[in-house]
Image (cartoon, rainbow, N blue to C red):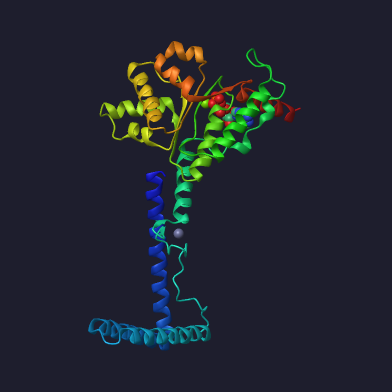
Length: 332
Ligand SMILES: Nc1ncnc2c1ncn2[C@@H]1O[C@H](COP(=O)(O)OP(=O)(O)O)[C@@H](O)[C@H]1O
Ligand SMILES: [Mg+2]
Ligand SMILES: [Zn+2]
């Protein structure tokens, strides 16, 4: 569960409770003004409860007193309801209207997080990722396998089958995710849907309340570096090392320097040791990976990660040429 989203959700739920109570107070004063009999009943009820407290502290026939109070209370409730109805109010006008009656807008029920809190935190986390990434466009239901139909490349003569398998794998991963889920290493040329499917997984899991982090490797590394040298505040590295699922997109797009390579090694290794799942995608081939990165990183990715090879023709380019054909046709 993402702490930031969780805290934000709790704040919203607390506000709901404060609002519901204030609204309830308003209803009370309104009714007491327009139906004086109800005001009188409420006064009597509060007097009775003071008497009960006295009885309890004196220890006299506590059980009996409480029983009598309960009966009085019920009678009073019935009277209030019929008075409300005859004054033209709905019968439940004096009940507090919580958004979640189960936890009375506290966010907790039965000593655990209420489902309303889990749901809201998931929605907030999705919205946060949406601000930086095109989550809406990159979902499983917008992934179109027909772009790979009949496509062959030098390395793969049946891109459609390969990509169908990759697609199914990602969907299964998202629907059955747990902290024991495998790591994934996605490799393939640009425009084949590596980012698209990574974001689709992220959205599903955020909705389920998992603490998922997604960004490009380059963004993460520049942030970690600037925090390391005190140029900005934050604990990005620590957060990355501990998330339920970390998605490092576009490994290899970062500038080549020792600090970055060391940090990547640190992230990969620490998360393996903690046995927390990680998804890494790259445009580099395994051979290019070996030329660029320490053998220790590459061997871990090749042996401890499930390897998904994406093949096909650049979908972004196909889309662009289809669009320009469409607009040419429009002017014919
Ligand atoms: N199979 C697909 N169906 C629909 N859109 C796709 C598909 N594959 C890629 N795209 C779209 O094409 C663009 C490039 O895909 P992207 O995931 O960024 O590629 P990569 O990360 O592999 O370079 C994105 O806008 C993406 O939504
Ligand atoms: Mg990408
Ligand atoms: Zn609730």
